[in-house]
Structure formats: C-alpha cells, structure tokens
Length: 300
Image (tube, rainbow, N blue to C red; front, side):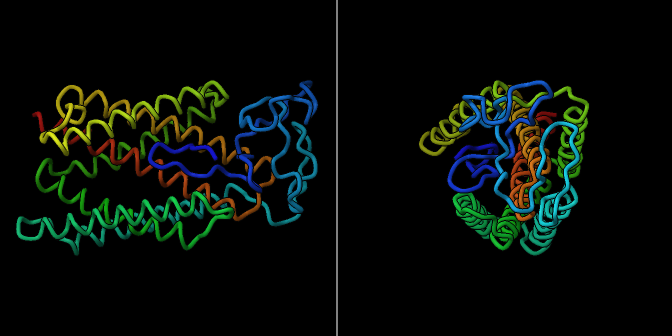
C-alpha cells in the first residue's frame, strides 16, 4: 500500500493485493519491451512497467503508444472520473452549507457546534481508513466520508469567517480552484513530470511536514498556546505556503493516476477511487488555504 494523499494514507488504485496503481508509466516507443524492466514490479513509476489491468476483460487489448485501444465496455473514462468527483465534491459542499446554516457558531452554541464538527471529522477519518484498506471502492463509504467531511468544513469555515476574517472562506475556495486549475494546466502542458523521483520527493516532504505538524500539536496540547509556533506568525505563513505546495504536488500525482487508469483500461468502479483521492487532496488544499489567509488577514 502506498499513499498519494497528504491527509490520509490511502490505498492506491490497485488490483489484487499488490500496488499496481495508475502510476505505471506508459510504454515508450522504442523502449524496453513490457515485462522486461526489472523495476516493473513494485515500482509505480518504472519505465516499461506492465499493464496493471491486463487481466481486466474489459481492458484495451493493445497498450502500445499510439496503437488504437478498443475497449469493450466496462472501463474507466475521464467522464466517469468527472461525474464521480462532482458527486463527491457536491456532497462535501452541500453538507458544508447545511452545517454552516444549522450549526451556529455564536458564543452560546460555539462549543456544541465545535464538538459536532470534531466528531464528524473523526468519523470521516475512520471511513477514509476503512475505504483505504478495502479491496474495492465503496460508493457508500466514499459519499459518507464526503458528507461528514463537509460537516467539519462547514463549522470550521463559519467560525473562521465569524471570528477571524469575514469573506476569507470565499477567498479560500477561489484559491483552491486556482491551484487545481493551475496544476491541471501545468500537468497537461508537460511542465510537471510525474516520475519516480518526483513521487519520492513529494512523499518524503509530506512525511516531514506531517511529523512537524503532529509535534506542534502535541506541544500545543501539553504546553498550551500555539506549540512551536508553526501555525501562526511568520512560521505559520511559511508552513501554510508549504502545505499548499504539497497539496498541488499530490494533485499532480492524482492526475497521473487518473491518466494511467484510463490509458490501461482500469475497471469503471475505480473512478470512485479517483474521486476519493481528488476530494481528499482538495480538502487538504482548502484547509491550508483557509489557514494561510486567516493568518494574513489576522495580522492586518
């Protein structure tokens, strides 16, 4: 199992028990024959890696670069990914709006609303972990995760907008959309090359970032205040920017997984995993964007 999301460790797009993710590189024209690369097994970014969905009866029968691919039906398409992602993100947005309206954050109700939000976040975490270890994607689990995540985001966003900076939520949403569009354009233009080195660098950076954040949280819990100061002032701004950059890098990994899944004829149900991963990454970017903008406006 590998992780390609900065928030939770989730199963890659795989078949059977091994990591066969959508990250297998497409065979290169004139390159080594499929199956001859010693790194083809267990290396999601190896050149000449074998088609991870070769045993899928609906998969394209010829994956050579430039060859026509005649799918027979039940294969994942970009439209499938877009529709599932729209459903998942739509659930997040809907429950976020409802929680904003139904869970007031005025002084009299703030503690209760915060309690519900933290409970929803914990439930979302458990659901995401359950899905991560399942062999197949479960739409019910993924949509339930999105619903509880939306409750958490709605309360947090309302509190930030009420007590820190009015209008910051809209700015964070627009900023998240801008990051998504920018990474997608850069990826399609070839400015971002997702390979083994890129993957290793991003994962190492993400693990270091998360370790620092957990350490800061522990200091804040036991020592009070903001812990080591990684979430306020100049350091808070720096780590907010780093968090957004990491989220953008994980978006590139998600795009690569989706692209390879379509290329290699992944089963259509795997589109739910693509939606799951993209949603988690976008939630990460939104939270980091919200935190960064709150620090900047709070210092004004």
